[in-house]
Image (spheres, rainbow, N blue to C red):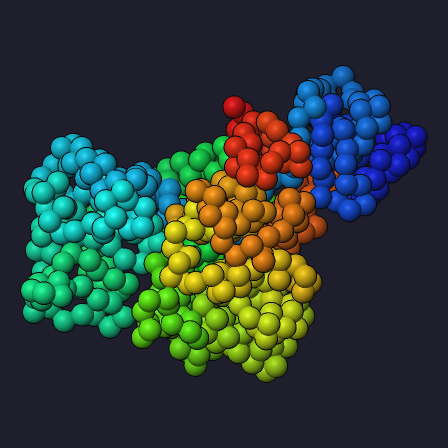
Length: 552
Ligand SMILES: [Zn+2]
């Protein structure tokens, strides 16, 4: 490379790139120009043009600075003034499992029970009798009828098949009579530990609502998935997420099958998202035996943290709280794993060099999890452990101080204020001002991320921006205004903070020389629209590793 060229690149803020990129990688493959580029890099926040080489950013600056870097082969793309941001990082979702659900289950994200029943009836008509009819993403608070699904609804709609419809939150389900028969569950069946078959209050008969561990009685009867199904599921969900501008994702509860599916999809050219794959603690012994730990993998598929679960769910109102749910004075939610057991599970992985990610929603769940992390760090101090508090929803001042002291990372739900607003009544206005607490975290110098938890929450980053900036639901009701953040802050939370949570802040999360070329092109400038309209901004193109994975 001629000296002048190296100096020129250095002058464009790409000294790092020039220092480590092989010499043949100073020729750009692609130059995007004429753009309104927000880099999320404090040293060079704005640019008009960006040069990309070998799947990484090479240089950024004005059109006049970057366009001359083009050699004969470089493709020049005129952005026509469109806004560009780094690709969004969804720091907690369940893509592999969601992909499989989309392949096989009826999407019950519909606004009336009659529509849901119609969709199930249609699926039943196409399903050989006796085989399962499965639904997911049903939400008890979102249907026009204002009542939950019943056993009778399902029996009427699906009389010749066992039926199982899962709640959007994934912790509870509704079944029909044939499903109860298939699972040999009747009035005399005792509830399994950690689960419940609900009964009608008046008659004492099973009402078809099954909770937590009781779902497994049914799930184990569903036909299994092949290796190809797993890969197809990843392919499908990758496409769905790429369309919305997500370029990286943390699978918050991966299994060995999921980890293999991501690799299979990558090798088949079907993976358009980078995946940081947490491994559920039930599989950790296998991983430890193979010498695997956090960080193993490549820029596409990487082993994440060990995942454990401390308490219940926000959307299904089972998170463990210090004060009861509004209107249910004896209901404090559920602690799924007690402190000693959580310590035992976490210690093994921490000792072996794993990052830890623990689902902790309620203030009691968070307190319990922090106590385990604090104890581990005292007994076996590790440099930069980046303990993750998955969700970390209901907080208070003393929890925040401990999170800060530990350098822990909260991954709060980014679309819940918008999407699940109607459920917030059960938490009450005061508590909601301390939930999904981005303002508090940022003010305390903590680095929270954006996280959908999909399926429980929608994954569209533009919905996340609207939710985090305005704290309004779809009807305009305000939930927890104290926690509003600015558009700029929300973009940082959704990009560079997500990268930090997976130890990848040096390779992604901003448009900076040397980093992976992951970006989105938006139809409108989020800094110029009314914040209520952030959700309407179209994602026109998504780039991962220098290649377009979505173009509208
Ligand atoms: Zn989750």
